[in-house]
Length: 359
Image (tube, rainbow, N blue to C red; front, side, top):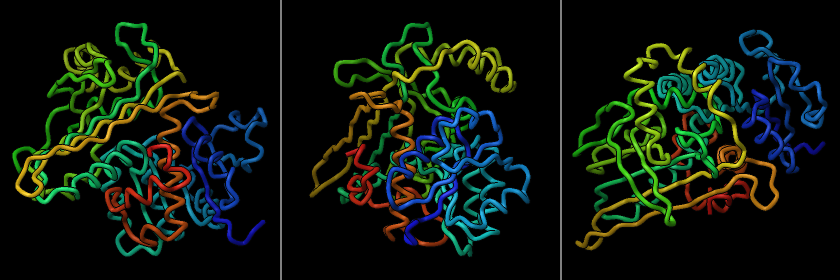
């Protein structure tokens, strides 16, 4: 084993965790170990090349022991398990990464990073994550940026139910997005707005979509751009009609107040798919040399493309995480403390061997 390899522990052997672990393992620069509380996920032997470890992260002693010989940890666990992992990382002194969309968790992790000897980079997936990197990149092109619109959706390529939706990622994260309040900048003021509101429709490549306010995807960008832009918002993209049906469940039937029921309804009734597409659409409007300009970044990334084995949400989320881990290894992001996604260079990101998926 090369001494230059960085030792990374991946927590969670679900779709994202396995993708991150395999992508990092395929390089010569990382010594990867994957861990999960369920020993059955390793019974097939498919993950033997990833040095699998059965680990319950709620056992703090076992968690700290697993971290002690690692340089970094990537948590792809449900958001409510991220904070104890980050606390252990801070205590042991290892670098911490996660793709969480949970605002409260990210704020707590930021507090842990104060004075830490290691780096803490939560929210380093797609949204939050890359979406903030590209938005902040476009903002820098303007002398006076005015409006920033961020739109992201992970959708089935072949919708065939009334929701026009299939499950492609974390159900806990999905319900968080639909039920928690949303940060925005509106007419120069930071505020929180209700989820599932501000419905709009747009077309991309001849396909019609809707978008509406959801929680978490904006990351820390409201803080960064406060006082610099007039309007900033993030919305989730779906096929038309989805928002109204979810609003019936979330608000009219009050399932946001009974999230275990909401999770059961969606989880048992909406099928999974790997045949998905991720839509990323960012538009910034502002003044250049006294003239009003607009610039956009738009991309569709398909799952299982060209015979690949990853779904679109696996590909986009895992490559974003891997790119940030890799950029940290290369010294292109700060070595310690808290790092916001928008602090990461767009050019460094898309030129990275993992981040080039977004180029």
